[in-house]
Length: 284
Image: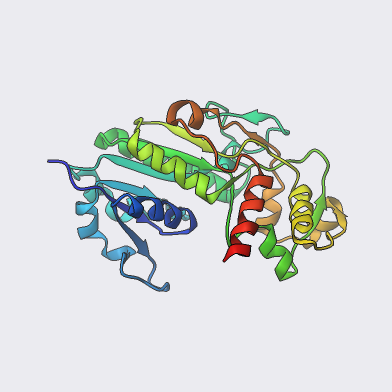
C-alpha cells in the first residue's frame, strides 16, 4: 500500500524549505533534519534520530553536503533506505560545479564531468555513490545539479545593504544562477513526474557576468554601483571558497527541465528575479 505523501529532506536548507512551502500548501507532510548545533522545530528531527521518519516517508530529498568520508546520509542510513518498501522518489541536490571549466561553453546533462575544486569533486563522488546505491537497491534516484541559488534574503540586495557588494571585472566570464522558487518548482514537478535515473540542470535562461547583476541591483535600489575592480586585483583578497567559483567559466543548458518536466521559469533571468524580490520587500 502506498504511503501518504510525505517528504523527508535531509538538510532543510534554503532550497528544501522553499520546496516544503510548496508541498505543505498541497497537503503534503514535510519533515526535515537538522544538526545538533542548529535549532530544531515542529517539523524537524535531529539528523541522527531520523530512523522512524525514514520509514514514514514516501519521498526523500538529500541536500546534506558530502564530507571527506563520503555522504553522511548513506554512511548512516544506507541499510534503512535500501530496505524501504514504499519509497517512491529519491532526490539528490548536487552542483553544476561538477562540469568544471568549459571556457564559457554551454553544457547540458550529457557534458563531460571535470570538477576543478575539492568541493565539486566531493559532490561528483557523492553522485556516483548515490547512483551505485540506487541501482543496487532498485530505487528511483533523481540528481539535480544546481547553479548559483539566489532569492529573498540571499541576493545582491543583501550584499549591497551589508556593504560587501563588489563589481569584479572579468570580461566574458559568466555565471549561471537560479531563483530559489524556480528551483523548488523543478523539484516539485519531478515529484509528480519521476524519471528514474534522471539528471537535471537547474539554471535560468541567461548566464551573465557577476558585475552586471550587482550594477542592476544597485540601479533598482537607487544606490551608486561600486567601482569595477579588475579580477587580477580582487583575486588576492578572495577567500579560498570565493576564488574557487572564479576557476570555472561555463554556461548551463536548462532545456531538459522544460522538455521533460514542463517547466516554465517564473524568473528566466536575474532581472526578473531581482525585480520580484525588491517588489516583495517593498510590499512587506
